[in-house]
Amino acid sequence: MKLSRYEQESILNYNAGERTAILYTRDKVVMRKLDTLVVDFPDTYKLTGQDEVSKTYSFPKSYVSYRKPRAVSTEQRERAKQMMIAKNRANGG
Image (cartoon, rainbow, N blue to C red; front, side):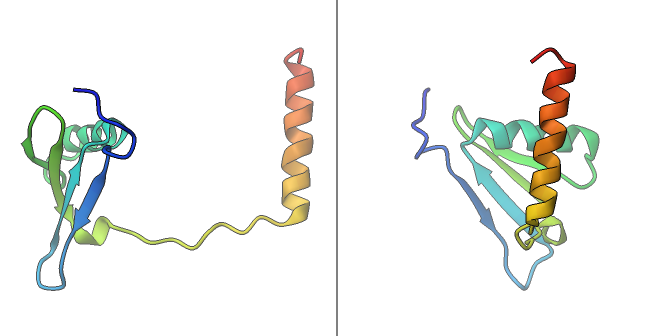
């Protein structure tokens, strides 16, 4: 079944009283990432349900993180730009 981009949702649910987070997703990219974690870390990540378009996973809520946006200075941006230009020239671009 083909889902629209809007229908490819992910819903993360947890509360203060429990240690586990539940992630419901219809996004194939998220499913692939979580499926890899389930295989690599079966004691931590669990596939708890699935149907033809969605999967549900559980994992410790301590693994949910919130990060500040990365601040890139003008100098860092210019240095990265120069490195990309040099890399393109070296690769014949």
